[in-house]
Image 1 (cartoon, rainbow, N blue to C red):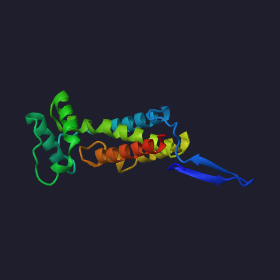
Image 2 (cartoon, rainbow, N blue to C red):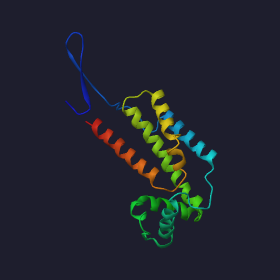
Image 3 (cartoon, one colour):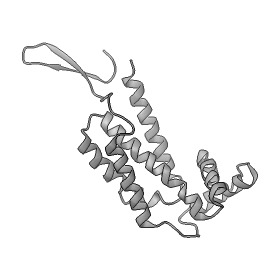
Image 4 (spheres, helix red, strand yellow):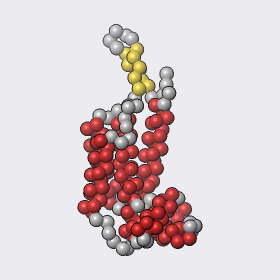
Length: 177
């Protein structure tokens, strides 16, 4: 028996197996895209424009600025080692739009939207129907923790994205023949 399967006994005593994952769930479903668009609209309502550091994102932004200018990641104490790909991603936005706190913070919005899409796909692969997956995704995306942090350049949202990506890839691996 493959991992992720369960055995049900029918009243006649015969065993039937079924998988606990929904292998047909898509990453870019219509309801998942609606959740991501609603998330982005709420971000626009917040209007995260401030040319000042918020919480700890100023130190992450300095590392990104250094990378955009020099091509090297320069460590500035306690915060820099955990940046990784986020510094590269933020530097791309700094190069495209010019370096400002707002330009670097804009780089977090696509990561947050991708996390919302992944979360919806994960819920559907766990067997939730479209309505329940959409409700769960909106509760996640519009929560008072996720939404405010998604407009900062802190490492919380990219970390959630990385964890969700790993979970989604594990679901794909389990469902693979």
